[in-house]
Length: 393
Image (cartoon, rainbow, N blue to C red; front, side, top):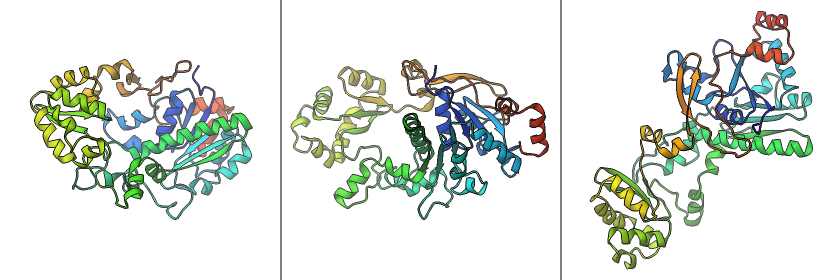
């Protein structure tokens, strides 16, 4: 058993935030029915890189799902969707607010059909506020939410993090909201609407940047790879690259000084406390870089690990996918796609002892499961063909 088996999710999402949330639900057993536009499908089907004619981008986000097509511009499709909602547990969508209402399929309509329905909407700015109708992409909310203003090298231009965290974090919060709504429904029998704004989620993960601003009145700026409040907590230059060292308290700092043979730094008035070290970070960085240049990354890793000092090389992606810890935790899995063939994708990060998740099926072809799904919802072959004639599917 998986924890979400027998849950039926009608997934209207596309590109990244919504599909990421649906993928998580599918990894843990939910039946994800991905409803796509006929002939076109999810926008990300057109995003590279491609393996043959299939988008690797799309395939990386849509495993453990089934695909059917539906054209909401046709009345027959709207009526079909309402019939499916009556038997579904969750509707997940990431349209701009008001789109589903324009189709006549908003939450107020659907909850009358199924009071137990959990309706999860993830949009750029949420369903309320002056920005609710503004279009948004990941980079838009990263820019507006402040994360870019504190990312990058000190004195450099604002920088977008290398992963689409504006989308991914919103997808994670949407999944958390669905989990809480499922528990509420288990207790009360009532469904509800979940409204997640990507911009809200960016503000929620600014961490101590918010508290630093209110404490000092000064807007935080990029600091490169160092931590704003903990020192040393950054990369240092070895003879062949960089080694990250995280000395999160005075005990680890003392161990580092002893390892380097620089015991005098422990009592140096500039570096006695973490606050002192943070206030004098630039001076300390020069001293430590000079020490680290004497050995290679591998040599430093062996010494630091033996001393119990948190450390890491800065791995490139090719090293990440071969890392023994990543392999041991099954975080890179191989799956067979009917068109693309064998491919490798990230595994399931939440390990559960009794009801584990897993990657079972590859991303679907567009409309691959339309007939199969509609038969499960009680439609006859003749009724399915009639929907095709009406261009509803």
